[in-house]
Length: 253
Image (cartoon, rainbow, N blue to C red; front, side):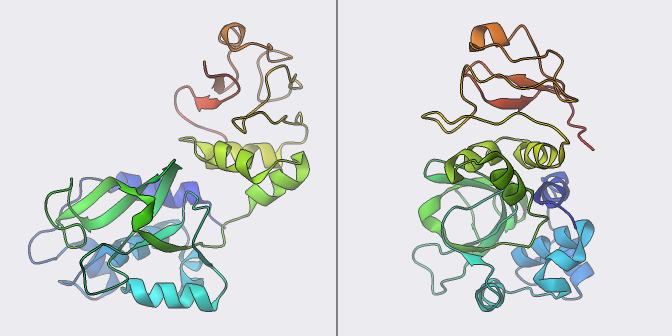
């Protein structure tokens, strides 16, 4: 079973793809219904490349409303705590429909969500639900009606149970650029140190991490300014203490 990061990797590669004319593009052709609104076709296509079974148990739809109803009926509809890989359904103000548009959630920060979306515009001018291409868009969370959550391999739950982490800590780890890969790596390691909690919900300063195949040094220094001198492999402890970041190219398989 694929991970959220696998689906997002497909979506990110498509950024900048533009339609030919009159909503004609490769996603509609692959779907078998070209020349129509295609935001959901783009989402469906991304899942086809990563893992067909993850999207509606192998089914298909080009309708935001139909996906929402399917997700609700199958216990996969969420309205809070959005995560990378969720299929967001937007309700834009001043429109006749409740399910105007969709995109694949990449990250959530404060009151904003960033998603990879097809059939939108590259900016706030132009149609948001019938634009010309695939773009990374940052929108207010208040525009999100809810989201379909595919049944990815639940490394999040494994790590949370194994390390005794709170939801806010998991959300914090998942929000990083390579958060899904980090969570998968930590969940499947033979040995790893327990995380502590602090006010930001990330790794606690002063908490030693046991040396294993992730770390170059046997313990992570207590203070961030010292930690910068001891890079992790392949992660660095960022300056704002206890936060993980990929240094170069992520290869955690």
